[in-house]
Length: 311
Ligand SMILES: [Mg+2]
Image 1 (cartoon, helix red, strand yellow):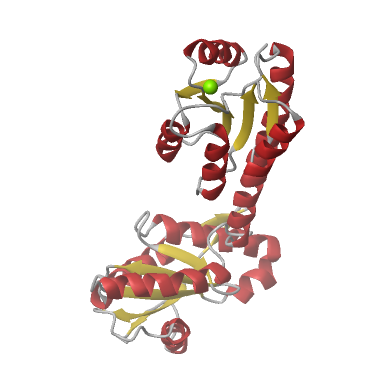
Image 2 (tube, protein in one colour):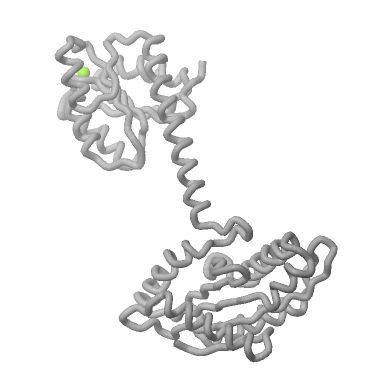
């Protein structure tokens, strides 16, 4: 019967024969095993190898099982460590001492194979649950920073991440540019083709911005309806102007195919930044509104153009 789901168990036991018996039982149940001869050796292993399950003897040289329980509970590990004490000291007072020290469960020595398997099945059930909760919380985290329509970052993430980006560029004395991009006459797309086509245009626009900027360095967020902000770390304002001009030209040159409609989509760009981010750090909102104002100037000057100014 395999039930261990590859969970790693740390067996802590000073008696080699007892240790081997336990290891064999665990291996045949599908667990991965690590072993230690006393509490100190166990803590050393846990430092570098996280084990979600520890089965420990009580009486051992150097550090006994009770002190090991206390030390684990005071330690800092990437996940919860389930501790089972396995010993012949199984009087009621002993059990209470073990539980008080932080053990989760208790099993008498010599162990009964079926009882051990049943108790470990309870532990793995909890570990499976912990795993699925962690996965769900990671998914929620991703959802919380994603714009559902375009799947790029949302405004909330922008205001979390931009201050960090400013800080980082200032610390390393690197330049930082930002680019506000707004689709021209987007309302007309919605009015004449419907919101479904409008949504396709927004998605395609975001995916082009993402594909046409540097992977893993530049990042973009949906700022508002048809307004997107691209953050360009390590790029001077003059270079960012070149990037903006290239995006503008490519966007205008390649009509979008949306549900059979061939749509010519242009955009206006406002670019600003720091060749060196000054101290104190600039206010992210003011920084963005500077790019926004330049983008509006591009609109006023006839759309499908790029306006640039350093901060
Ligand atoms: Mg012992």
